[in-house]
Image (tube, rainbow, N blue to C red; front, side, top):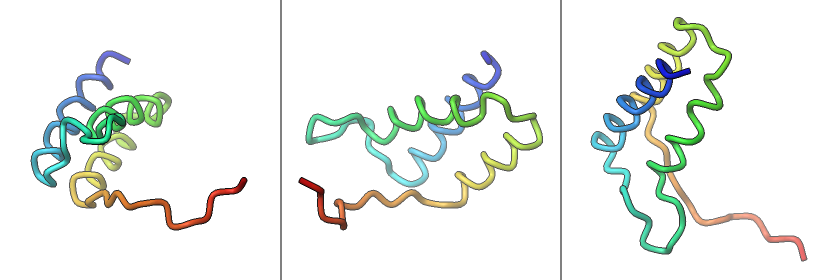
Length: 75
């Protein structure tokens, strides 16, 4: 798992710089960087090295777009 954490840190640093993802959220929420650092290791926990490389390639070439909630909230 430590290997995955190191890989994830490097990839997240790279994509945050490449796509300009903020390190801090202006509204008090977790930043995208923080979310990715938590999410990626969980997603890749049982993945082999080949699958992880494919995933890293995908996130390096696919920007993440954060939008407002477009659906109505249920009351």
